[in-house]
Image (cartoon, rainbow, N blue to C red; front, side, top):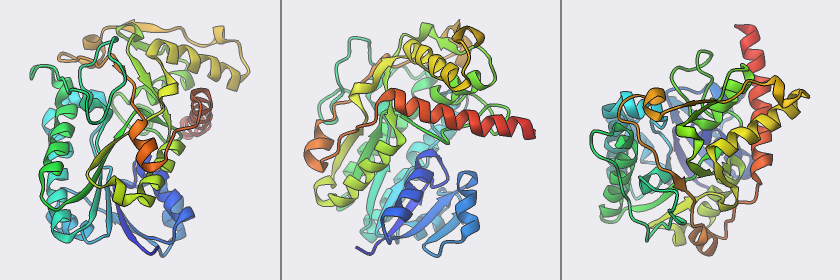
Length: 345
């Protein structure tokens, strides 16, 4: 099937993996839009005729119009790191509501299929007693306005509601549950500033032999999903578009659930194995409160585990990669990449 597809946020963690997979698995033409393509430097140098790279901001109306001409529009662009929810709430809301809303309006006019990447954070302020989260049944419960931690979740939730309300828009919503893999986020002080998400955060600490910080004791629980499973989900979505219209899908691996403390222990064990050293050679853990680590207004979602029934029944998708395998791949990449980066700097 011939197709033109726009990847908005193509230079990011998920976008870069998806772009490579599209080139390998399809004959499609790809419009790749982002403000940074450092993850795709090798591909850009190859000058593949099927990919047009557009270094641009989706906030610009002319870029929105250009993107909406493609048959499929995948919107991955977002400010999505917790430290920025705290310090840049207005920018977070613009990135995760205002810009997606404008793109959705444009897609409704052109007839494009909009695949919008939302977040598992829309489920909000869950507790440790929370059961599996169902796309169409679970409640969304957020913290107070003073807790700026929820700026991201609320903006994404509003985007979903706005998209669903637009007449005649062909859309599907993706709710990722902690995708992990090579090229995720950044190492603070090397190729980014601030606090990355937990995988890159812990990986940075391990590579630099610094303590992994357990926020609020690491009691929160998450389920982690290999980026390769996430990419496979997207191809199941593309192959079943008629069934996917008007639906929101959790994308996660319910078997890969553990607490953040357990994650730290497991990552430490894997990294010691990679280095062929005793675990005792690595730095110990350090505990801090959420407000001490992220700042005033921080709150957390204590358990997020997805129901995966819909993606299996409608699309035939089921995540397969075990957590330890996904973590080892990520850590081996992180070690190789940032050990060489730190040597160069």
